[in-house]
Image (cartoon, rainbow, N blue to C red; front, side, top):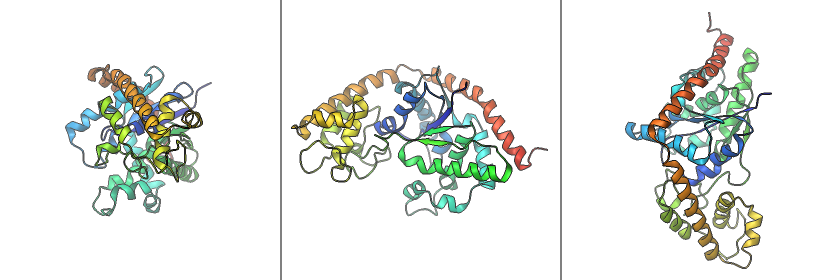
Length: 329
């Protein structure tokens, strides 16, 4: 019996953070034995905002190394570069024309957050980004999509577009489900725990990059914003700072939040942050050793080989969609 398929990806648009690892990539590692796993370096999504060409090339390789360093096994999962399979862009156009409405995209909160007050001046690609993401997912008969909390709305759109296409043209696409990590789905900013941790933040103290010097990352933890009082307790509303740190600690130590709360009864923020800082330092040290063990050439070959392996499936699904629409003569 074939395993169900999962699909997910990360943009090569900046330094990946511990939030990317906890919220998404570490979950993929847990799932790769249960699923036929496809993980993409979504470079076409990255160019929805302006990129330096040389940096983009380097970051495509970097993201792939992050996947491998995180524990994604190329013997179990397929890692590839999105733009190596042009069927992604072609299916996105078909969905634009047959299933997606302007009203759908105007609801997308990620676009509003990224475009801000300059919505008339950003690229059309940034506005249309969710349709390309839908194409990414639908192109591989995906059963489930493991994503961070902020991408759930986009997976819901993929479901809607698939249903509309199927209703209009007949059964073509699977309707994917979403997988979100219950704890750690969204890691928050270390300076302002009301905002999510982001690699685009203007303040380096607000995030921990996976390639930060371990000692520097430990100092960021020690300086992280906490809350009034001194109790180590998970409470998103009243104690967002310590709640965020508890979430990071829980995932990296593979302990439940309840266990951590119990362990720190009678102890203060200082003891807790000192232990977490040491944990983060040890994690990054081991992580970076794995990351640096992969050569650029090894990564390039992996991406090319896997794109060649996946392309027939992408061609098959796209051909079915084109035939249903009437493009195949």
